[in-house]
Length: 314
Image (cartoon, rainbow, N blue to C red; front, side, top):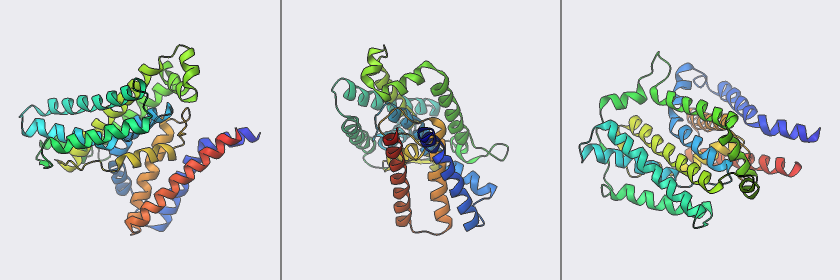
């Protein structure tokens, strides 16, 4: 009975938190619970939401990826460089940016599996390399001026509701939620996160899966960079600073365990909304940005405490 109660609390705690937060903000400010503001929140969380999908996979196998913010910056800058300096067709520039971003993830995966580096150290190294290359490519200068159709992807709401970028985020949530729930590859991730050695002995190719997961995470970070560039209509080497923290926070708040083997896309989506609602609501309430950081940090700490408590009682 006690175990079942703990499981229910652990599963639905993020959803309860989102409902309580929504009710509080709806009561505290007249402008929060309006269609226009909620659509703005959806636009604001697209970048973190796309990256959080990849981070969910990484955390599920018991890893961590600190490089996603820097890989995002590389994606933005490489796409802008190919377009402005090489004059390549813009769709090709997007493909190059995402493909080269994936290489950073593969590099992290090889460091973890072949060189046996801890994920924290391996991705910290990749973070530094990607950030340096993002600045080096234009010597620290920003790039402005993308095609109008590209900017429209993030600002034009089709049917008055969703932009293309928000649609991409929602599609990723659905596709990868189905993958984790119904595909054998999804179950392999949970097995690796639960016990890598047992997973290996059961026939799962742990090293290959690990490299694939980090490659996927970096690929989605590259895609998030493309989305960010569409929103800002510019590319800056400083793009994505500290985005890895918000991304990890969204996944943990959504119920994933840092020890691996626990979590899902549904919880991550809720975590992304909690982060977005917090930032948006606190801005509407004119709360200091420094206080906002404190509040978000407290929410992350609470999520980790709940996860630790849940694992101990099991």
